[in-house]
Image (tube, rainbow, N blue to C red; front, side, top):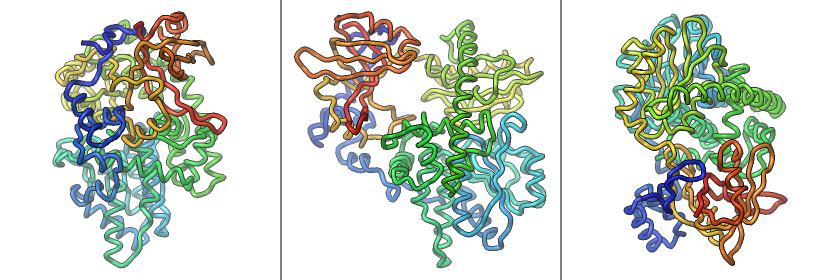
Length: 579
């Protein structure tokens, strides 16, 4: 039965509450831990018992960091880098152009710099060179460098790595591996076919961090002090959230510790980026994914591809301020380009149908730098894997985003092995592809079949999952702080959403271009403020504003609204229904 009997909300969604076993577990946790019921609801959905709660609420790298040596090729990778360091060999870092690639490169560049060694950074241009190593770039780098380290790329780059004649190549990646490995000296990747997959949730920066841990350990064995890695975990946190890695296991510790490191404002690039983005509160995982991450990504999408890595690795506040301003402007430009492509892609996908296992769109003249974001928007709107393709001549370059429980990277790699794609790869939640124009329809039809086998398209597009009920009087600053202790929230760990039942809307008005501001409460109790961003782009804004004094169920997340030095609670309204 639908939660609060909401089968169809004002935005057309069905509300789904916690399962009975989760509710029972939450009640038991509340009795044994004395934590607020709302916090216990979050703990219960993670299937924790009372003994596991303290460790979950305070995740530490000391307890959760795996031994780097469990990963194949870790020893030759670490030893080759240390050998290059000792021999003062020239090292090149070849990185992907997204946040994970930039953070991975920055980790290596900073570590090497602190060991007295400056490495060369190379980030390919998205449009001219495409994703990952290419033969021309690798051949050129090999002429001047003895060692090339490919980060967040390279696992499927057989020919480009073979072209790096005269140089050793080490790959540190997390994308799904093929049946054979490229001819590199080492491929450190938890998603190699011959790995257990136990660490498959790591982003590339997490894998690089493990490599640095192992190198530091080997330096200690030689009585040499290595750089302070805890000062670098902020970069891993940023990449983990921005790359939509699941916030489970050690990833939770990376993000929690990284956010603490960011609060000290010691990395010039992140300080400058936070300032230009006008972030005036303590950073949370939300800021990493939706405020800082898009700006770091903007350089690789529509500007200079290496801007992100340069920003994250610089020690010069002046340079950081300049690059951050440049990225902020590029992000504004990206938004305008994205909006136009999103409108066209959604219209095309709607015409094709949104009820299948895959939604996709393709057209000429779409900027390749925004198709990934547009795919994410289609995925969010439909609760289905989405692929958006920019056509150019006889080929199309596409980007896809997936939903929980559906491995898009594996499906696209299968498609490439069947010959329906020119190339393709990625990981569970995101993937890229290149397809011949005359194979486009057949490839997308086959991709839909593969995704349907994994369950894509079986869930309702309108399901809104809720963790329980709250009343305005119970939504306090203390509760929000307690809920934060159960975080960080993100992929595979959604922020808790609660329903406020039978509320009276005392005030509802439009603010800005398309946002809804409300004030609501229950009979005789305290009132609460609420905000629904983009509400007038959907049916939510007009419906709530026009509901008058009718009782309404409201659903969303509670967070802190900081203004004038005061913290107050507000509801981030996601949905509403007539009571």
